[in-house]
Length: 181
Image 1 (cartoon, one colour):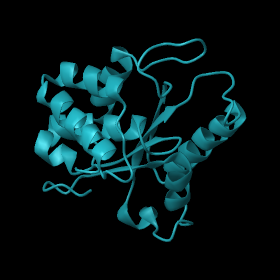
Image 2 (cartoon, one colour):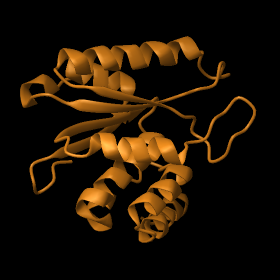
Image 3 (cartoon, rainbow, N blue to C red):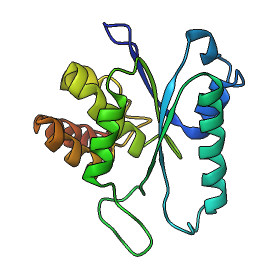
């Protein structure tokens, strides 16, 4: 999404972002100038649905594509959970705070996770909310594509002092379940 000040935030899976930054995804992001990226990636040693080597390769491909485009990548190891469980690590307040500081002033920002659904959408909304307010931030979300991670939203709304963001995300997520968004 392009905001009124000309800056842009996009939410997408790491693999799609890497292809878009190398001109392989139908639209070539390189023509638009440098992009920076935040990669929320899995931490667990083994996921039953995908080996961790796949995640390592996705992060590596994204970082190489961003760097080749004169951008930088912030890597945030966190799993898509709301609390620690066995080998799964929930997002931490320090990680969300670091992402907010790191993203400040970056005009073209890709926020990515494995699928581009939960962690990335939550972090992108928090970043947009601090810059442009909750109403504008909510425009980043599509009910058919996104289901923001509740823990990132909770931590982010606390850090930026916008408790209304939690309510708006809860209504958005409830609307996805009922089909009314």
